[in-house]
Length: 136
Image (tube, rainbow, N blue to C red; front, side, top):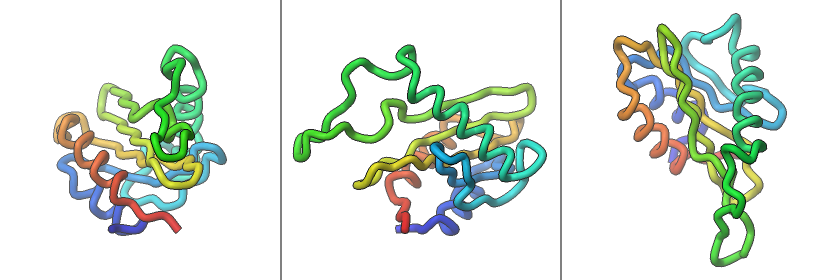
C-alpha cells in the first residue's frame, strides 16, 4: 500500500500526466505534490482545487440528499462525490476523493495534457490509487 510519495509517483505514470498532488480539501494544503503545477505554484494550485472540491461536496446539486451509509457503523461513508473532472483547452484535471476509516478530507489531483492523456485510464488509475493510499 503506497504512502503519499509513492502514490504521487504512480500517478505520474499515467500517460500524459503533467502534475499530481494529494490535497487536504478543508485547509487547501498540499500534503505532497510532484511534476508541474497547473497554476503559479503547487500551493496555489492546491488551494484553488480545494475550493472546487469543497463546492462540489457542499452544494445540493452535486451531493445526494441521502448520503451513502456504512452498514457496520451507520455513519456516512466519505464525501458524497467520488470524483470531479474539469476539462480545459489544454488539459484535464481529475480530482478523486479518498475514503478512509477516519473523517477524511483528502483528495488526489491529477493534471493531464489534453493531447497525450487518456481521461478514462486516468480516472481508473486514480480510483485504484485512492483505495490503496495509506495516510499517516
